[in-house]
Length: 323
Image (cartoon, rainbow, N blue to C red; front, side, top):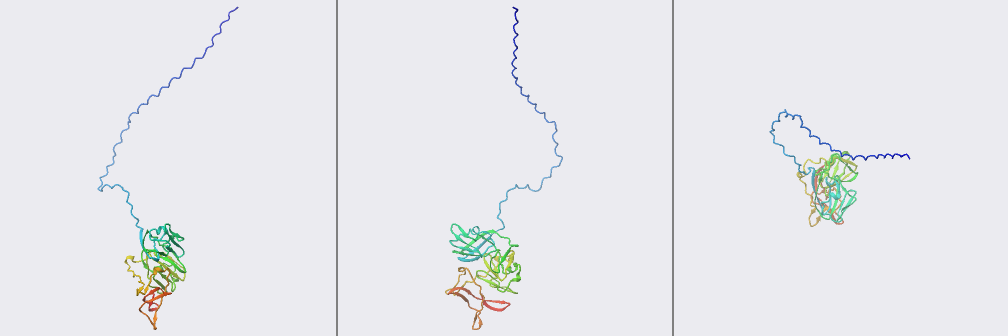
């Protein structure tokens, strides 16, 4: 038999060589030093030395109290006090927080609203805010002085409505002024009529056409409340904005009447009463006008008023009457 050649071996592929490690990049050479020349010194001349001393280091200024903050002290009676203040401008519990002698059921009344004091709570009622242009009546069990701190409200351009009838009015200034301040602040002063009135807790004045205000009440005083009675409604503008030509300290106030005549017989305490009445009278004895003595008013035997004669010269003639 013919010999067959052996089959040639099938070549096997060689395995791939292992990957060679990549050498790290060579470090970059340090940059050569800059060849730029240094800037030449400034050619500008140096400023001459100042003759002024070096400024002091800046410091934060110390806070100073506002010059617009003022203090108003009001004396309250045990009983009723007609009062007002230009600092009465905001929530009643904030304004009266220093009235520390208030006691249970003490009361403050405005013309339409009121509030009552409840210990441990404060003032409770529908009178929630006080206003500088309004008059109030405080009824307290104990009297004392209270100092109020605040900022004066700007009265320039402020309007105050006056009813036909009675209006409870405050004096929105810390300076006293003549009752003529009301006339000057009226939008229409020609509507004033005879017997229009202004009254405080102890005094009053009446309007006489062609003459003016006539009576014992001759000025508005800080801290006091007033009532104004007009036949026709009117409006005040800038009332109390520029009220007086003299400071309060420069005014010699007439002391309030003692309200005691023959102390063992006639004693009167106005703060015991909430209301008052205006009376102008001439006392005639045996056909002649009495020019001395005192006149008293009683209700059911209780003394309600004492007056002394006052002399006036008015358009209606000279007379001596009791007010």
